[in-house]
Length: 145
Image (cartoon, rainbow, N blue to C red; front, side, top):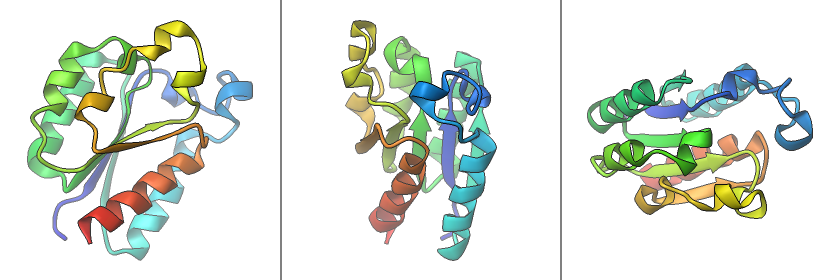
């Protein structure tokens, strides 16, 4: 496969490991990237792994994925609950989209019940902590097989 899998991460995920560890755990985003890279490498697939705190940059990366990626794994973080622009960008994609959340947003605060990513996603992995990313990579590999 020539096109990489894109893994995009939204705001505050650069602070994983120290930010609210009782909710998000102590694994860092660098740890997650390393484990995902190892899985992809075993399968002979490249990953393009990004994190941004900027909504516009995240939308731009999603648009880039529309042309450059074989699949998208997305943890939009708080933009999941607020960004119609992100939903509109996701609707451009004709590749598998796996939504990932470390926690289970449906079991959290009422404002997290609004989700602008799920309507465009192929599927999702919620509430499994950092291992959810590995689950998403494995799901994408099966979808692309």
